[in-house]
Length: 146
Image 1 (cartoon, helix red, strand yellow):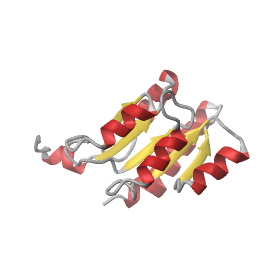
Image 2 (spheres, rainbow, N blue to C red):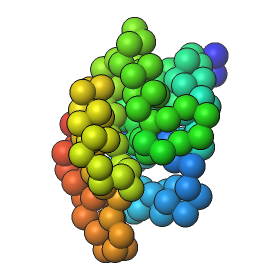
Image 3 (cartoon, rainbow, N blue to C red):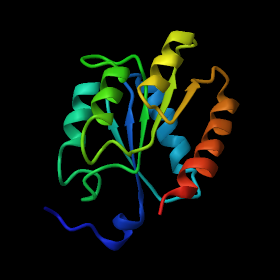
Image 4 (cartoon, helix red, strand yellow):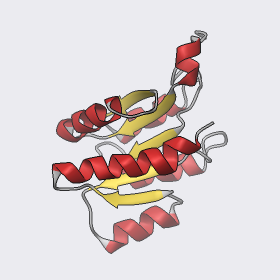
């Protein structure tokens, strides 16, 4: 297993599970502007994300991310299915899972929270609103990571 450098150890590890290339690129750019040192890993489907979460040397050698930013509508394994798998896996169950989905359906919101998501937000349609979401993520979630 590779030993992480001191800089890598300090970085906040985020697994972004998103199949939409535009949304993935936008979040990557927003995280580059963060006040926090972030290492962002992208998975384009739920199955790939689950495999990454089971790799011991993933996420700069930490073995797991500090946060998962998860879309619900994914190929191969839906976001809700992935969330359920994470929550029932020893060692992964406490990772904060932030849902960012285009879905405004009450059923999706309720299902996400019943499956123990920590946060649910509908993807903003206006570009400026993405920065508001990023500010919230920084102040509420990233600031609390040891």
